[in-house]
Image (tube, rainbow, N blue to C red):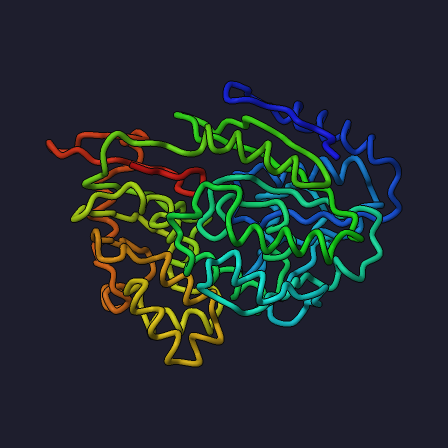
Length: 416
C-alpha cells in the first residue's frame, strides 16, 4: 500500500513538509507497541534520513525502542557521526549491525533462479539474510528509511536492499555484489529493474512477507548551492520504490553531450574515508569518461582501501586491474572467492583500461595508491589547482583546459 507519494522534478520539500508527510503516513498505520527504525549510516548523510529518523522518534516517543543503521560492510558509526546525522536522538537507541556474525537466514533463493536472471553467468543460490533484531525483535513496525539514487550494485538504491544488504550477512552481501558486477555495472546503473533487484524481490515475496516493513524513500537532487529534496514516497510494497526511482531517474541522472576528457571529483572528508566508499567517484562517472581521459579524485579523508581489515588486505593484494583479471583471480584464489563483494568492488573500481584514474588521498602514500593500479598525485597541489571553493558543478575552464567538476558523486550518475 502507498501511504505517501509527494514530489516532482520541480518540488522543493522542506523539513516541515517531510515531517507532516511522515506523520500523516504513520497515522494511517495505526498504533504500534514497538518500533524499529532502519536508516542508512553517515555515508548517506545527505539522504535526509537523519531528519526522518528524528521525526519518527518524535512521533513514537518511547515506543521507538531501537535504531539499527544499515551498515552493510561499513564501520560502526561513531558518537560524533551519530550526533551529526541524527541530532538529539538518544544515542542509547542505536544498535550496531555485525555483518559477519549478527544475522539469520529467512530462506534461500534457488540457484536456478540466479542462473535465469543472470543469463547463465552464475548459478549459486542466495541467502535472504537479515540482522537478528529484524527477524526476532517482535516489532509492530520496522521503518526502513533511505534515499533512492543510482547505485552500482543494485541499479537504484534502497527499498529491500536496505534490509537484505544493509542488515545482511557476509554470504548475501558477497553474492549480491558479485552478481551485479559479473552481469555488468553499465547494464544495471540507474535501472530499477535488474538481476540483483529481481533476487531481492524474490526474497521479499517468498521469505519476508511476515515482516512489518514500511519504506520511506527520499529523492534528493544536487542543487547549485544546496541539495533539493524533490520527493518523499512511503509504502509497504514496491510501488513507493518505483515511484521514487522514476523521479530519481529524472533528477539524478546527467546525460552529457560528449564524453569527458577530464573530470575532477571531490570526496567530502567526513563522508569518504576509504576507496571502498570513495570509488563512487569512479562508479558514478565511468559511463561518462572518454577513452584516454583522466579522472582526478580529490580525497582528503581517504586513509584506507577497505573499511573491513580482510577486504582492505584483498584490495591491496589484487588491486583494481579490470574485470578479466579479477574474474580469473576469483577462480584461482579462495581468499577472493570467499569474499565476492571484494571481487565485485575491484571490478567496479577499475576503469577497465579505458581511462586513467588519479587518486589524491589525504592518508595514503604514493606507493600504496600505485600498488592497487591507480595513479597518484599530491592532494595539496591538486586542491590548489582545482580549488573546490572556486569550481562550479559541471564544466569549468582551468588555465585554458576544460574540466568537469562534481562536488558529490553520491547524489548522481553521469553518462555520455
